[in-house]
Length: 222
Ligand code: ABF
Image (tube, protein in one colour):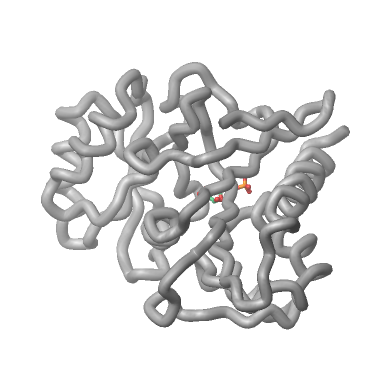
């Protein structure tokens, strides 16, 4: 199986996971990225079995709409039973690094609302220690240099992601060389820096289930 096939397999497994719970008035939280795209395409097959979705990015909203799936503003929705999204790295505690696609803030908001966060990824994303993937941090543009200096004090090497403006009008710093042994503490420490909007560590609110596409089949970690 190649990586695309693993993504499709894991997307299909996530659909199987939620299928028995779908209800006609249910709204789903849907993430961003190539694995989430596989899930959106699979979800289209059962679009009459739920009401619609909240998307974590404009790109995913467009993809959902192209399949005829209604997209709602999160402020009009009181409950999300499921949030299905990918990740850039995951550990066995279901702590994640997300935000390679620059949608981390909206992803974190949707994850905060959702009852159950199902993370879908191919097995290459599972690591012992988070941080080989550069940690994305969304920053208010005028705070870029200040936040960069503070991230250096935390042990990282921040790099400005050139040419990228988030859906919220902010910039991204990618922090290299972080060996994240305590993800909850690191998430909190970065959040404390003035000018940081969000960081891509999902440890205070980890995934509830991690579905991993492997050559031997889909493995579920909870
Ligand atoms: C989003 O998409 C992100 O948080 C993460 O950056 C990325 C994973 O993308 P892919 O599924 O394409 O590897 O979920």
